[in-house]
Amino acid sequence: MKFISISEAMKRGKGKVAVRGWVYRERGSNEFKFIILRDSTNIVQCVLKKDKFKKQWKDIDALQIEASLEIEGIIKKDKRAPTGHEISVDKIHIIGTSNEFPIQKDLNEELLGDRRHLWIRSKKMITIMKIRSSYIQARDEFFKKEKFYRFDAPILQPTQSEGGSTVFEVDYYGKKIYLAQTWQLYAEAAVFGLEKVYNFGPTFRAEKSKTSRHLSEFWMAEAEVAWWKLKEITEFAKKEIKYCIEKVAKECVEELKYLGQDSGKILKIAKKKWPTIKYRDALKILKDKDKINIKFGKDLRTIEEQKLMQHFDTPVVVTHYPREIMAFYKPKDPKKSDEALCFDMLAPGCGLEIVGGSERSLDIKEMSENLKKQGEKPEDYKFYFDLRKYGSVPHSGYGVGIERVLQWICGLESIKDAIAFPRTVTRMNP
Image (cartoon, rainbow, N blue to C red):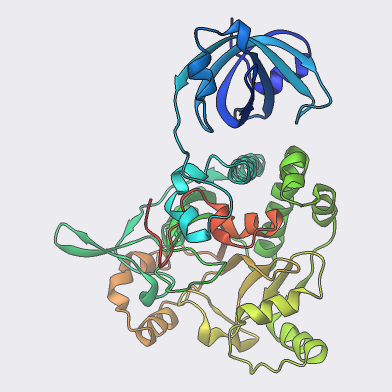
């Protein structure tokens, strides 16, 4: 027989089916073996009677969690079964045995991390990875509809872009080079030809942060557009996130429910208007409502972002952060020189920074001075400054931390569960 998925078999509801997968749970007696079989789509209870499998019974009785099987039998509805269906097995083929699967209940985070290659099979991780896939596919769909071009940049880059202290240094044929902190500098070169570009790729930050919201390697979804200024890019960033979370809420109802999340609530958030406030407005809210006094010029810490976002039920765009704490390429506001034409988007409740972006400076002298202050050599950025010399135009862009968005919409305690194999300051294996 042709194998079908467990979900397809349950949709049929009755008759002969052939399914395959892994043992999710098992129990038995002298006369019966009950196997809960899982594949990527669902689980189903399979019942094997000893008198049908006398020659195979020793092997069947020895089956343990995660053994792989091919099964043929008659499926029927049964309210007592975990997912409302049961297969009465006629044939079984044991593909791969499993003995004492090393993941049991009550393992701590460190031990689960050591066994990540096996933990990724868990119901929780399968569910999160499905939501992640749905989100990423929705994003590609969004940018295609918006008539953007996919543009890929090198991972190995000769300069830093977000801060010299957070780069991973690599030996490149005896010379020093770095893993990409962002795709941005190369995307800025691309917009003078393609005008509207996007990408999705790995990003590396050597931040020694041991928090629930930091990774050393994560996937950044970025966009860069010629001619656009701050207002246009912030509104477009809202549009992108709204599109993606709405798509996920519609496609992953059961997955979100399993994680304790309400897809209907996410849909309502996507339909609402998302406010934009200035950094100075954020300081005032924190002072008036939370009695937290922050001096202008300080970046918002995690606790302050969390406090701020408890006052909102949608993401909020915060613009015009202090220029002195921003990356070298973020221009000062001509109307207020101590503010930068930049923005972050924060998620409601948790306060996670899910998007960061800005207009891009066109002032070579100002950027050179900023780089010197950061201990960088302006001459290393010749290719970047060339972009300002030959038909330069205003342009803007942003990056979305995909794992941060997933942490928010999935309600995850740790960002490490938003990626298959997390890399952190304390974790490089498996």
